[in-house]
Image (tube, rainbow, N blue to C red):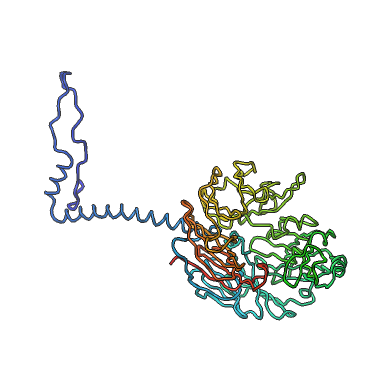
Length: 564
């Protein structure tokens, strides 16, 4: 049975306009085929023969094809834009857009952000509560009542863009009166996972410190240093005698489960070397904070220990440092550094251990032959991935689509920038001040010198542009604290000092392709820090009390900025 032709179908012949020539029967010249109308003419004839229903159907098909073509282009662009947005949201220091003047979307006065949660939530302490806010809108998502003086973590370090890009699934909070502290673990939705009292006999006292750590953990330190951070003395003899009487014990440091108290792992810190006077103690005139040239010029004395007693419990690592005793591990217990004696002080202690990525770390080291300061790139299991005995591997605070085949490092105490291959071999060297690498985007690195920001091509080390960090109008110098990028621009947080020695916070935005720059002034007496949370630009400001050092600044506000 013959197949019935669909009366609604319009067919078009798109065969060749002429058949190929064929040889005649007599083997002579090829016979010429009869000329036939072209396919467009034939289509026109069939259009005229088609009834109105067939014509409407054909027009709909043609229009649909055009919509598919145009719509497909739009969908492709939308997919590409979404992909880029996701890359920015998941990159350290990655902000969705820095195009235009920045303005506050929301602002909260008080302390900083102790915890970053998945899906763009940030946790703040408000009174006796822990409160989760949507970073994009400032809207409150949940609130958990805890108790007096809540301290939550794991807290990303202000200067670490990598740690701000490592959201935590659990929030650990200490709370309650000093002698009756307790710990509560919350999940990302604000529900209580578990609670426990912390007896003062086990967790309190001057010799013990506790900090909330990653994965519902608790960093516990017990260290009898035999000396407070500061001692006041009226005479030179008193100052010298006080230092020489110090006899610190070894530190005992471990991470335990905050809810059960079970020890997860120990953090090795080594033994004190007894070089406290030469390496750790600094003497200051407490009347004006100036540094005396000799003991005789400082009356009364204020003795400070540096590095002071400090704990690190971030999303990336845990550690402890006091004077010449220190150590750090990953959040799962892999040893990153155990520095003691002179090296611990000279290399910067645990504070100098930085997260290069979520699973790689930069650990300071010293070349035994030359004595130069270098660093190692270490994996999450503690294995050394790259040795750089005379260079410090750079850890940019912002990194979007960076070329992983080039590792940047500084050497000569910041007098040069070098590009290294993954094995540590030098690819190129750029001789100029390179105090640090603030950001990387594609093949551009933003390098902070003594006075300028410099855009450097990481493929060959050539300079692309240069921008002065200090503004020309009466601010003689400025230094950067942090940076974020959207891949096309970089915004650097600066603390500028005026001619009257007053401090002013500023944001300097530079186009990565052209070096075109714009500035926005923040509050006076502030030290700004930038970070990216789920693609949003987070600004935390420290306020420096009058006649004080930057180290004595307190976090006083948190805000999220976006282009107007």
